[in-house]
Amino acid sequence: MKPLFAFMKKEIMETARTGKLVILVLLFALFGVMNPAIAKLTPWMMEMLSDSLAESGLSVANVQVDAMTSWGQFFKNIPIALIAFVLIFSDSFTKEYRSGTLLLALTKGLPRDKVVLAKTVLLFSLWTLGYGLCFSITYGYTAYFWDNGIAQHLFSAAVMWWLFGVWVISFLVLFSSLLQNNTSVILCTGGMVLLAYVLRVIPKSKTYSPALLMNVNSLLSGVEGTKVYGGAVLVAAVSAVIFVALSVLNMNKRQV
Image 1 (tube, helix red, strand yellow):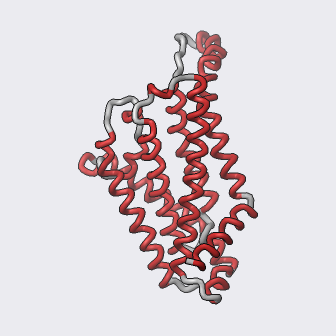
Image 2 (cartoon, one colour):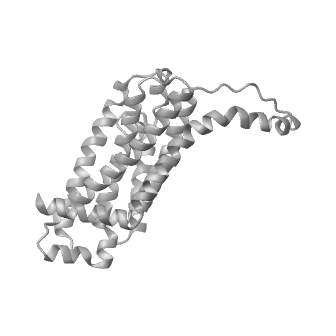
Image 3 (spheres, one colour):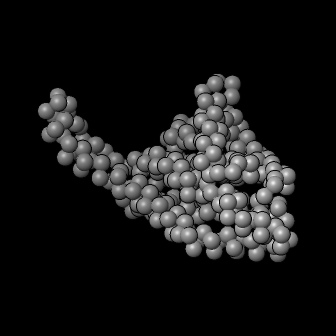
């Protein structure tokens, strides 16, 4: 375990030194503030646009906003935050290949599986940190302006989307162990997410596609319960573990 913790410490210091940690915190904090802010300002913005819309023959009724509006913004914006996360950390492995620092670490006796596990734990932890920060800020401001109680299964919905992020990051780890540059890693990760989204359209595979975890509006409104997501949760969790295991196998066979 000592080599694992030593390498993790090095990764944490590298993340802080390169400014990625600061960017991550600022990004998720910004989205956390934006969600209730946009909801709060929506009636004012619609009022400002009412005159120009009236000239086009459109009338604007009074817009009512509540906690559901704020959480709707949260689940609309968090995919953008996840994309930014993937872009920021897509070079987590590939920069080691280019610089030769990974080869140096391996020659000093660091096991290859510890490299994959350390980077995976760090990526999952950073995603959890950023996501938790964004959720907490949104929750606090939404509770200040409205009543969070009207959002049904709120924490379950949040966990669903967090798990989807973990699933996507496991793809990031898998393709990073296979490919040489971060552009290829990004494209392959995005391609697998797109495939999961396409599978969600097929009725027989809809309930098992991890992409279902992105669609939490019916859960928030109380139209559906958490049981509907059981298959998708199981597939996402098991496949994430499998992808990380495959990443370890790929790293053990890879010529660095």
